[in-house]
Length: 439
Image (cartoon, rainbow, N blue to C red; front, side, top):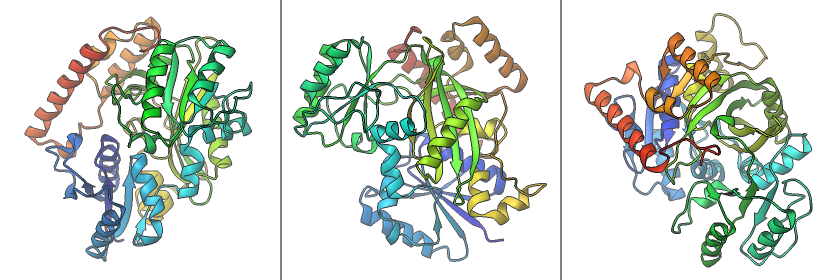
């Protein structure tokens, strides 16, 4: 079999976790192509680095990818990323990228179908998956009035900020409300004071302030204002899936979020997960992927309402997700889905029996965390959940994506400890005590 070169574009913690998994399972050669040497791979010896300061230029990206392909004529090539912006750019430039690059990434049409949260809500509505009531705010003169229906592209047209505010008042929605971009890749390019990954509006005044900033900048995409589904962050769930080229869902994994990050730029990203099997949510994810005719990795965010126990889906990220190591830690190496789909010889060489048509589902439970255990337990107040978390730790320890025996130089170990200390400082600054809402 040919050697495999696995190129991670961007170098975030999700790329590291996937490259770690592939290196551990198959011995694939990790390479990182990024603008700078990133925080999570600093002092790492796992991957070869290629630094390209102008990587945001599509022409430069294409040239670099084709150059790397040309320098490795005898390798199998896999191109991988965990940033929406990169997924979109790769999809846009696919015809110009060397065809030897195998990509577990969706095409441009599919990206547009799922990355817009309004379009995602419409798909969910068609397959009987619940989403929160949503007002889609535009900044290009729209003045339609939303229909009295749940969120979705068909039932919630884009409206002006003034109409959105009046609609919220007329519907009697209580604060807090949630604000987020409809398209994450567009959010990347706008800047204003107080910008956050996800906004949590305690009052109309706070909402108006953000809308005014977007009006001033003629923001060209939609901004979503959503009802807050009650329950703290332990009611949030993460779900990772893979659908292959034949239309088979070959991976389904999930977990209960125990704690989210709370810095302005990372708000809402899970910092700790206790893995679990949620068959109802898995069935919903499968219906969404089939309806969207989706291909590749997908990462869903949903929440179990503390009011009625229903599952409410918020979005699907068209990529593997920052926290994908929880899947590998729970017993199903995430690189297996890619090998099974794109490099079946490598997959079959590592398996004791032929691949089955059913999806791989890790059963766990295991404890995944990027924060120190003692810090994590400070934020978990429910006694039964504390017992489950403690039991998982006692049974198999705590799994951290950056702690890898194949990448354990002394300086790397010291650096990871420093990152953990910095994480603790961030929590003391931005989220010193747990709250009923997670904000």
